[in-house]
Image (tube, rainbow, N blue to C red):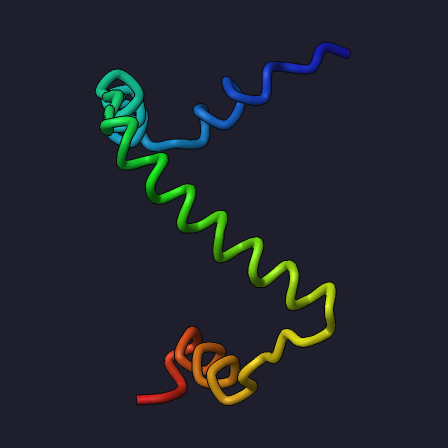
Length: 81
């Protein structure tokens, strides 16, 4: 028994116009370059915050605001206006 390549098998289920769109998207892949200094600033401030939270978790002093968690959870299901 021969098993076909998974990628070729999935293409067979697409409508012809979807195949053309998919190929067009693959061909139009662009590389976006950002200045290196922006990345390092963002990473350093983010890493600082991660380190702070990690220390709080390890010390047992990290507190979760249950109301914020519940609000975001309900908003993710559009249950709160």
